[in-house]
Picture 1 (cartoon, rainbow over the protein chains, first blue to last red):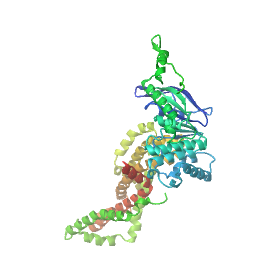
Picture 2: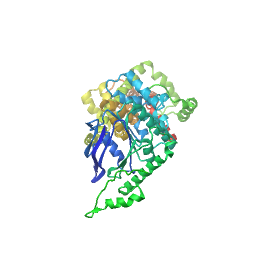
Picture 3: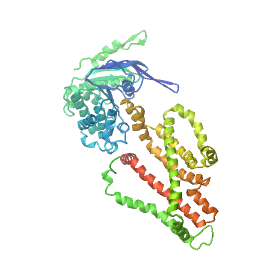
Picture 4: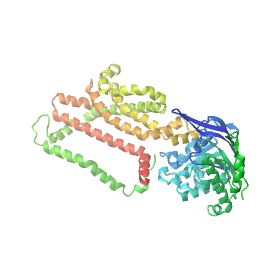
Length: 291
Length: 272
């Protein structure tokens, strides 16, 4: 569905070369909810912008449904972290949600209205269509941004740390909203976050990124039940194991090493890493079975 | 734009309006009173009592003068500012959107802006004759700068996240201009228009002092040359009142068009 192959991005400017993303390869299957998590400043946003066609990669490619992404593809919607700067303050909520639809060909006014009403209903803001975004709270504004993405009827929804700027309680509600919408609408969702708990709670799969220049540190299947709940899911032993594991991976990523998940395996890993002619060999270990 | 101010401000709106009116009129009332008292016994020909000026006002500004002098002036002003707005916003949008164009244009713009429009009157007269066209061009040539420069700044300052949002949803070209760039730059554009309006009034008067047969500027100069000093003063008063009325009208229009902007500003101020 959504393929990232050998993606590399180097920023060049004022005599400085910054390699933000080194070599990323992963796939998101149709209908999957994948969370990307990595240490802060690890090039998550760069990656997402390359994937959405907002930024051209230095090398490598992104394909969506087999077609190369070289500009924002029509089947993709983007939810930004900065909701306050992503909604247009001169338009009411309804108009904000409707605006992208006006660019889609073959959508009549009646159909557009239907999509807008339905999307706002889905995020629980059916009454807010006539308000201006700045009259709403932060969490509600981000709901509007999500509604705008939903009304667009995308195949893939990209979310760039969408809840990083809202308070914890709102955040929990919004997480459940994303889970629910994903289930209801059978979309493919790629959710970027720096919050480990959020990644594990939301994702069907978690991709752990290394620090910048970014490579995939690890991919991890989240085998939590499909129905999740803020209270019960978060206290299950399995959730704790998964989050601990991701946490260790992130810590290892920060150090720039391959993770050693358990004390018993540490020696093994150390041996395996070893050196070859004085040059450290990068040994990528598969995810070990969790206890 | 439908609807009015948000409900939460509805109850205190009238009281606020009243207070604002008092604040607006307090100083003018004091100044007029001072003028009235100090000029009351004046024997100076050039400095007649305000009482005399006010009495002359109603005799000078007859219906005939309103349609024959005031209206043509106001129409020229409106045409000049409108022309400047169209040219300024259009050029400003192009210059603000492309860095290369900006680099090429900036020195030329700085030069042209530095030339005071009144000295252009004789030049413009050569090309545009001595009729209304000349006067409108003179007004526009002075008004265009604040509009142009403010538009450039406004267009340049379009938020990067909004810009990316528009791109990711395929909002490009004319739609981007209409839905993103111009609304986003509108507060700056209005700031430019406001400056343009006051420059426009000055240039309206000046342009009518050259080769004119009617208009406020023409009439005031005529009074001055025929030593009808109180009449001249009434013209000056009328110009002041006209400027005041136009700025009130402008502010009303701005309040309506930029309602979102003021709301947004109040909202962000309240939360931080």
